[in-house]
Length: 393
Image (tube, rainbow, N blue to C red):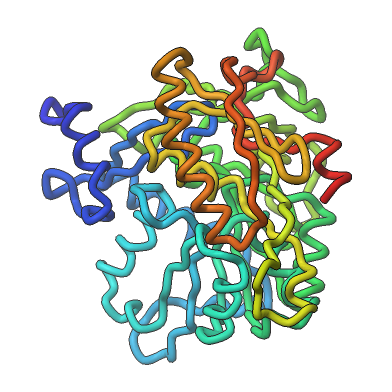
C-alpha cells in the first residue's frame, strides 16, 4: 500500500493513546521490543490478523480440563489477566486491546497489568482481581510462582499462557506445581505472531503452512535437526502488506525430529528465546514500614521492564550489566556526546524504576563502549548479570 510511510507510522506508534487504533482505518500496527537493538514497526493487514486468530483457535492443544472456554455471550466469561509492557504499541498489548474492542463483553472480565510496577503491588492487584487465566512472559510466571509458594499471591488460576521468551522443562514443572494447572506455551514474534503452538506433551509445533522457519549457523548454512542454531530465518506467509522474507530473527532454535506423543505430525522445535537476565537487587529497607518477612525479599526486575523505561527515555540500543550488588554499568550506542546525553536520561529513568520497585540505591555508571553482541549470532543481550553480582545477591 503506497500510503504506508515510515515517518508517519513512527509518529503513530509514538502516541500511546492510539494503541490498537486502526491505522488508515484498516491496518493494525505494532512495534517490536528491539531484542537485536533496534525496534521495528510492523503493519498487519486483515488477512494476516484472520490467520493469526484462526491458528490460535484451531491449533492450540489446551488439553482436557484446561478450562479455556470459547468466547460467547451467556457463558459466564472467565476473568483474564494480561501482564506485560502495556505503555507502548507492542504486539501483545495491541492484540489484547484489539480483542477488547472487537468483543465488548470482554471489557468487564479482562485487565492488563504493567510489568513496570513493583512486584508487591502487582501481587496485591492480582489478589484483588482473582484471575482465572493469566497471559504473560515465562520469567513473570516464574516470579509469580515464587510469590505463590511464599503465600503472598493467593489466586487459583485455571490456566496459564506464556510466550515471548524461552521456557525450560524445569521452569514449566515449577510453575505448574506452584499453581496446580497447565502452562500453555506459544512461539511468536512481532514479525510473525503465531509461528508455533504448544501441545499437551509440552512441545512446540511449527505452523509450517503459514510460516517458514530456517535454523541456520553463523554463516547462514542450514542446521540439522537436534543441533541448536545460531539464529533462525523467518518467512511470514500470511502478511502481504509488509512481506518478511528470510528475516533474521536472532533466536536460537533446535528442531526436534522425533515423533511427538500428542500425535501431531507437524515439526516441533525448542526455543532458546531471549538471553536477557532478571535483575535481582537488594531491597531498600530504610524507613520501611513493611513487616520483616517482606523486607528480606530481594527485588526482581524483568529485563522487559528495563527495556521499556529506557526506550521511553529515547535509548534504543543499549546494554545494562549488573556488575556488583549495588552497581550497574550502561553502554549506549551511539557513543560520544550523544551517548553521554542519553546516559543522563537513562540514569534518571533507571533510578526511578529501581526506586519504584523498592530497590536499594544503585550506582549507575556509564561505560563508554558500544554494546557487545554475540560473536556467533550477532544478537544483543540488553540486560546481563555477572557471576559476581549473582553471588552477592
